[in-house]
Figure 1 (cartoon, one colour):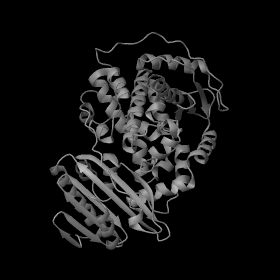
Figure 2 (cartoon, one colour):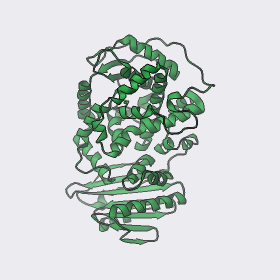
Figure 3 (tube, helix red, strand yellow):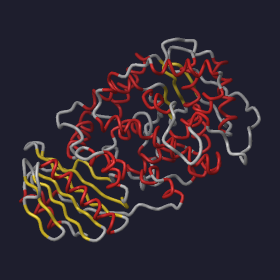
Figure 4 (tube, rainbow, N blue to C red):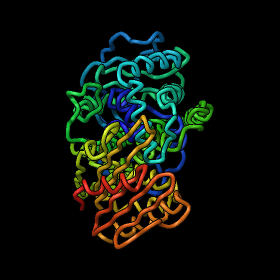
Length: 465
C-alpha cells in the first residue's frame, strides 16, 4: 500500500520510494536537541565505538554531471563535504551522480510535475477516504493540495535513486552552513544507494522494480532505517564543525518557516517525522552496539515492521510479523461498494489510531503487543459511507486482552458511552454508525460501518479467528 502512511505514500511515491529522500526541518529542529534516552550517548555527542575503525582513506572526487536546476553550487565546497562524510560514514562513493541547488520555486514546480506523474486526484481521494475510515482525516480534506504546500515548505533536500541525482534547496548560489549540512545528509543517501541499492529496497518510482512482498508497514520501517542512518551521519558531520558554525546552523533551522507543518493534521505530522525521530533512535542504538557494521548489516537484512523500529530488541532477534489474511468483501457488500485500500497497519499507525481517543501513553501501551495485522477499507461514495475491517494478531492472549480494554475505552469515548450490546468476547456500539469489537485468544477483530445489519453480513463472510 501507499495509502495509510501519508508521507510513506506520497514521499514514497515522490521523494522516497519514488526516488527522493528528504530532510525535514521540523525533525532536524528536534534531533539537534537531546534525543530520547538510549543505552549510552546523546545524539550530538555520540562517537564511534572503540572497536570501529577511526576513518578511511580520502576517496576520489566523483565526476559531476550537469545539474538539473538553474542554480549551480560551488562544487569545491561540496567536494570537501563529500570526502568528510565518506570518512565519517566509512563508505566511499563508487560511481557518478548529479548534485545541484534548487530554489523553493523550482521545488514547487518539481513537486507539481511529480504529482501529475505519480499521484492522481483519484489516488489522493482514495488516501483521504482510507485515513477518514480511521478517523484520522475529514472525508473532505484536500490532501493532494495540502501535501504540495507541505513539501514545498518542509523539504530541505532530496535524493533520487532512480536518476542518481540529488538537490539541496537554497535561494543562494553560494551554499551556507544550512545547505552544507543538508548536503551531508543527502550525500549519505547516495552512499547508501551505491552500497546497498535503495531501488532494490523499494525506493523507486518503477513498480516493476519494487519488491512484491514488502507491505506498507515494512516499507515505513525501511524508511526509518534509511533516514535514521542519514540523520546520524549528518549530526556527526555537524558535530565536527566549529562550535560557532553549529550554532549558526541551529539558528538558521529555527528561522525556517513551519506554518503549513504547524496546521497539518496530526497523522501527517507524525508520519512525516517518524523516519527521522524513531529512525534515528533505532540507528543510534545499532551504532552504539556495533558501529557502522551493525548499521550496514541492517541494510542487508532490513527491519520488517515499525514494531522492530520502536522496539529494537525485536529487530535484534528478528521477531517476524504474523501474517493475517482477509477475504474479499465486495460481493458481500453489494452494489456501489468498492475496495479503496488493503494492507498492513503496523504498530506505529495503530498507535496513531488509538491516540485519536486515548492518551499517548495509553495508546503506546495498548499497541505494544502487536504481532501482525491486516486492514481493508471499502467505500460507497454515492451514499457517503465506508467500512473498516481490522484484524490483529497479538503476541499473547494477555496482550490481546490489554488491547481490548484500551479499545473499549476508545469506543466509549467515540460513542459517548458503553456498548449498546455485548456478550462473551464481543461488543457492539451504535451511534451515527456501528462499531463491532470481537476477541478470542490472541486475536481481535474490529468492524466499523454504517449499520449493524451491514456489519453482521460482513462478519458472516469472515472466517475468524
